[in-house]
Length: 149
Image 1: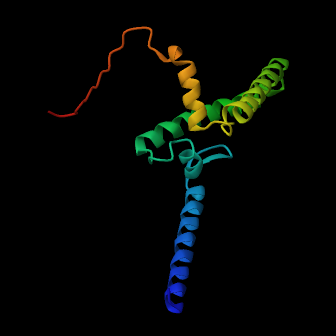
Image 2: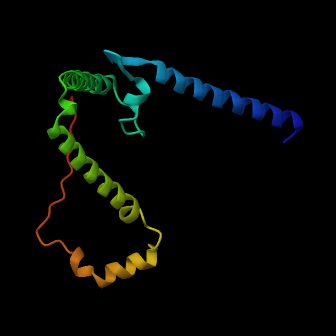
């Protein structure tokens, strides 16, 4: 690439990165809902959806409606002091324990695929092939539905 071409490519790259950063900042500033001082912004809402497909306006509306209802209940429970009760403390302790165990299993057991290779998987399958046989009759069904004929 020539000196001028390199300079143009760098400038275009910086403009693209700057544009993406501005778009992300815009999403963070776009408030979808507000309950008291709590805000749901567009970027937080989008993070709850599959990143491979942009949610529809209806999906965003339903998510925001659910968030509003949950936030209203959350704030009312706090106002009434439910978060200070012994029952809540016990529930929180149990949930924390469960989440910690799940995080441990996810990280140490489920995500550890370092020892798995195609050959070890194939050998396991061949050694345990009887476990991979369907015990019941199965039917494969394909359905196509159209909104108009």
